[in-house]
Image: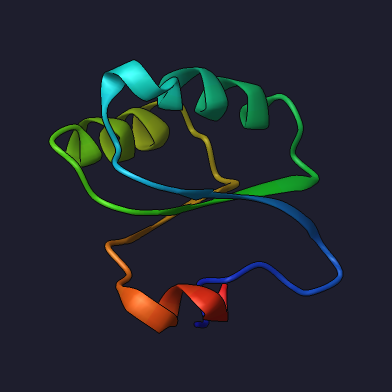
Length: 77
């Protein structure tokens, strides 16, 4: 859980499959313009690596990709 934002920091939590039709790229672009917001993405999908690479190439430092989290472990976030 060390990848989580500080409790006092505002963040957006996305839980679901990471695929192009879900608007993830638009979400990444939006949080890039709001550096005080941390985006935490829980999930995998066929486009996971594409979005992670997009965030790196576009210097989106306030997005954290945690991968697939199953069952009750999702409640930790």
